[in-house]
Image 1 (tube, rainbow, N blue to C red):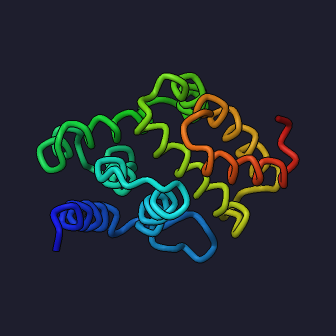
Image 2: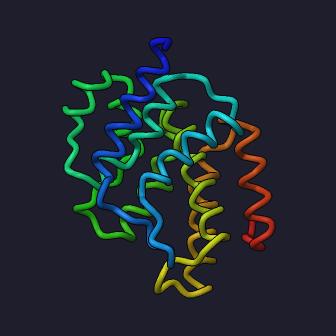
Length: 179
């Protein structure tokens, strides 16, 4: 097994352990780990990304935000680059939801290229997931508002990966998001 495969499997295992008791908010309550794996697959298969640190960060992108993982723990296990990418895409859960969303829009243009890739794939996964299945308790209006907000974030990520951006634009157009 080559060393990059080992690095990726370490990240998959770490994310699976950290997210083991979490579920998505869809009616099927799918295992949460499907999300970071799906984000990573989008980067690799659709975005053509082979940078192992970006792929590791994609697998780990919600561990600090949604589990007891610390940035120091990620740095010790996966190195400073992976930890930095994850930190760049991590929301501060101590802030109100609307403030976190506002900050995502504000910070998007200033993220590193690596973090922008993870953000693009994360948004693409989430929007596809919303098209597949509405989360429990979400109205059609809330879904539309999420698409509009996601467009505001994606605008700040443009010029990062044409393939992923094209797929996002198709989703925004399908949902009649004002561009």
